Image 1 (cartoon, one colour):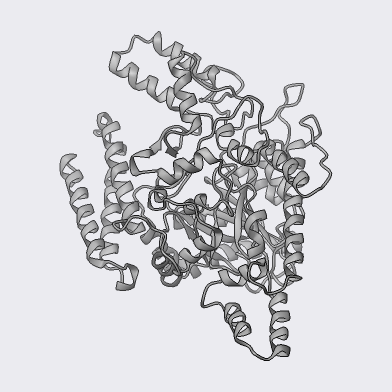
Image 2 (tube, rainbow, N blue to C red; image 1 turned 90 degrees about the vertical axis):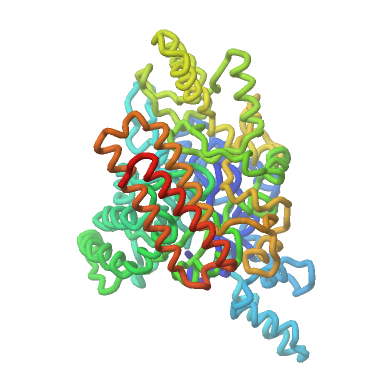
Length: 600
């Protein structure tokens, strides 16, 4: 994170469109947020909207222009950066009068911030000259939140020229990265999510945008989302050998987070954070040994000390007490608050229909689905316009979606060129195949459900911002889907940015569920349910030694987590008896699974 950041939290990337313009909304208040840059058509649509909204000339970048995808991304990031800079300049000239944004900036700061204390001193000051001096000082301390951009590394389909040849460095992820590199964003970061991509990481080696200056500072930084310590060490070392430093490892709860759910093998957030806490120096030293050698070969410089490494965490955080415990006990630099911000129009962009669904969402409305064409579990909200449209197509005998954006084309089961499993073409071919296989009716229904569950995300996760701003993303396509984390059921009202920030810092309480479980216990429950589901689906394979060992390890990791949580300090939770009762239930559930499936 930016070392001068004003706040202790950040807003993670959400979908393709839900945080697409969050920096324009929140960066001027010192709040960092993450933008997805995978959908260049969406970034171009947003650039058109904000050019017109701010009175600028809009010059389209056509999809026939050379390297158009990277150029669209660069242009939108540059526009955002310019708008935020203008907002900051305007704020610095404002009077300290109630209602002005400069007042809102300082009012939202955490109470233990030294800058907040200076602001409160200014309000109490009776000497006019001293008061003006403090105000002038405060103006010099205004700092914008960082604009971070996210690349989902798995979304990296190739692009072909007119002759049918793969375009070098023209894949989806690489062109998105190039769009970021060529932007004028400084003191910013690229966030890589969804695991290693050697092609993408190799491209990093070819550019100098991520090289350190003489003071070991970076103009552009690397952030990697990880699910555990081992992943951080492997990816950190892989990049260090290429002379690329990872400035931040962003730990994300596997199942207790929005979007795609990358379930770990029963490793839960508390024990994962504990390992990072105890091995932080080991992690830094191990990576630095490789990095300093690579930098010496690359730049001819001898490094005597390592650059800074931040550890941050996100996924399921819902209360001030949880946030404080994570930051103080595990010494994380920042916490990510995602799903609750979907109910803050001043921070995220959600169309009215979807926003109303989020407000009313109950536990039964959220599904850990198989809807994603990526083949990764996906948190899904029922009742969206995309959900309704999908079901209508199925009823009308026309399953599958048109595929105009083509970001998730990976399947070559029936075609030489990859297609998307949510597409009409794939689903028709697959259903036709199933009908020729003479499967038992139950098995046919099961496999048909798997096919029909897949849903277009390129359009569904992009449309909301366009609808909210009254512009068109794609003609004739208006469907929206959304992937909130399970935490959404604990928040049920649209609130202002200041109110949500006050909730994070414990100045108000927005949780609508008095029996809401601690975030660690919510994750535990999700993993136990996931384990039960997997055991049922793979029951026929349980005699296989490899499969059985996997489940034995998964169960062992859950048991270790239960033991770990039993020994957490009292400061970890507000209601210890309730926490312990949830732990006891988890212990009984895991014991029951072991007995049912004969795991000793």
